Image (cartoon, rainbow, N blue to C red; front, side, top):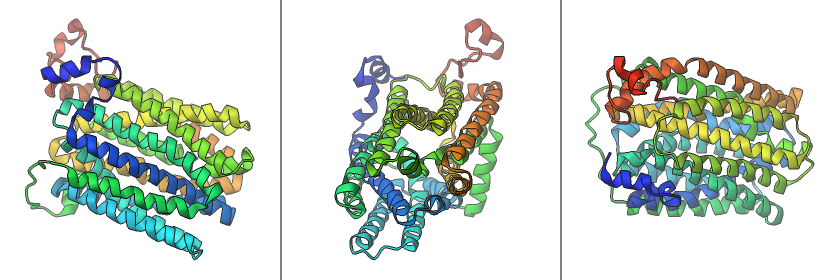
Length: 445
């Protein structure tokens, strides 16, 4: 570990938590992307409220989520190959520009009162295609903005904190704006919010990694990436855990308008406050992770946060009191964000350099690509058995998959230990001397 990094890790308080902001490229990206994400969350809340307000259909609410997320499942493996082949910064400028255009079209249709439900479905699908490329490329690009690799984990945690600070601010603003000016203003402000991140990408001075000309078919590279990911137990079981949580637990967000209006008898402000509480909890989780000095112990954290998330979703499904439910949803935001960011950090830490883009593509497919199926399933179940019972089933499923992951912890630790030793995260000690040196199980304890 470098002297500069060691000194940074020893700094107390906020200077250690925000140490990745020392890197110029990451710093300007952080503020530009932060502004954009506020707009993104405003649009998400406004769109879900518009769909439920105009259709009164939990099924169509789930379908809108399905259409925005289904491209991720099929496209992100290809996006991961592109991230390994081409300039990630240039591709991000393109994805952000297309997102701006999508928001402008949506704002125009709403403000001119021409919007129909099929417009929403089509534009949601279009945005899903954009995000399918944007997310894995942005995840893989993080390491290019950080000159000192030892700050990578902190940067990933700050990325998540930026995302959730926006989730804290955006839904609250959206709730107020929907009540006072309508959904169209939220879509218009989202379009404007993409300008800062595009400017920040243009202002960067990045030395991209050397990318050799592709010599193999893209499908061969995807197959190679899948083989690599699913032969290595830490990557394999993290991806399985993420996919199951996203399928059964995370769709609770899609049903928030149902809880806000029908369970808690509120309006768009209630929806905004619920989403904001989830964002506040997630922000607390990100600060917790950013303050950590090492990836050691994250495997165990992944296990218990998955179980915690499922448990609080069960409690939320049984609650009929808004003031009790708000701190419960805060804990759910904390748990799922710590889980997601910890998985992200370990995957980026252990993945081979030439396969990182593909691994992050699989990560995106596992975390976001399964969400559309969960959203659709949640919408169908909510229409038949009600939103509370739907979340009860989802929470129980998350607890079950967390228990399976806990059972795999010895295998994960065994395979991840040599990688950590090779990267200098833990001392490279012969296996026979690990117990005497106090290193047995270090990667997860």
